[in-house]
Length: 333
Image (cartoon, one colour):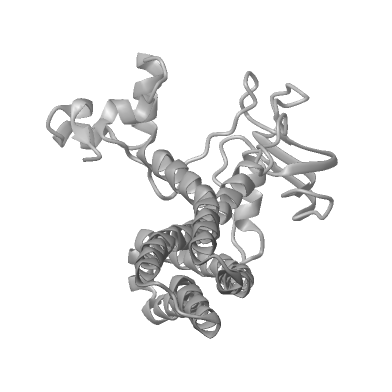
């Protein structure tokens, strides 16, 4: 709420600041009473054009900056999660090089962006004094200026400087907020998980495979990620999928759980004849703060026979015998 309130206040202040600046310039022209004030006010026009141009360039650098930032954060997260694998395979140099490359790109774009932002800030702060000096210079060429009007002009210039600062802050928000909203919009606009990809077996026979994958599948569009699959896994078999990096192992597993879109008559037949679901257990566990039992059943209803069957299948029975409280021990904190 505070963030949205601050953003709304900045937007309103940025919108009203130019009108307030125009009012101050009109008052200044009225105080001087001749064309010199109008000439001085014209100094705002080239400053405004340069500011718009600099803002456009800075927004491009800002978008590239966020791309490098995402790469760095993604690689850093993967490094922290897989730190044991990295240490075991001596991939520290590879991880460091990847992080350094992303960080260098991030810093480079940040330097360009800050240099342009600093130029805009310095340029906009010349508006009050630039207007004053040009006005006074033209006014002296036409005659003297009373001292009390100089004092009034100084007050008006001070107020104008405050409006210019508000516009500067608003332009900074203009560079960051729209791009952030676009990133959120692109994320929310991503296609939903395909429906009805995984279905129960068509033939209920004793020798029917536990899992069958047939056809071609894609992440989206018409270009298939996996082509002409015809995989049948018998019941009771333990199957491993091996292959080079990038050969499609993870994509194949995503196909099995129904995360890819089928092309033409492709389908996945699951072992569960009732719901057509496939169980998936990630190699990176997700544990929330609570008891061991709560982490196992989450929001599902408690079924004693199924629960203890899962405990036995996961090999947790010996652990429950030594843990204080058994399955009521608190974990995840």
